[in-house]
Image (cartoon, rainbow, N blue to C red; front, side, top):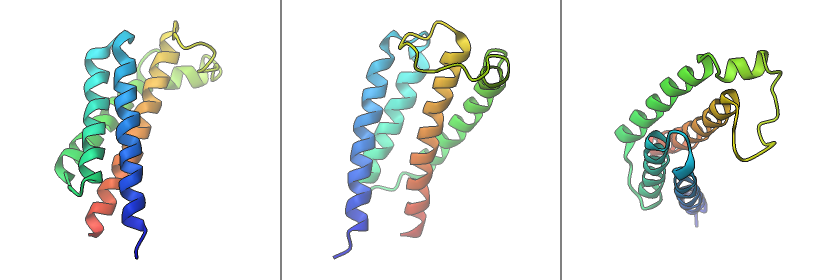
Length: 129
């Protein structure tokens, strides 16, 4: 019996739950109107993969959106590049409330990277079957 598909389903169910949790935690974010839908859509796509679906076009669309938005957050005045160079990669987890914009933008960038990796793996595995 092949365990790989079962592991893929389980991983997608775990990420479905995590992305739903991330979406719920965005209610007090400075820009929840963008982050709740991003995480909710990532959760929905993971759920679709877990239940045997292959929403490849929607997956690519969200991946490309995340790449574009990630590039914006990276180059923004108070973005990831600023955090790494001007602010000497200041601790991102010193407090849950990000009072500095470069910390908020870098955390958001990290969320996008997680989504890109998870959905990228789903997209590639769906191509093989």
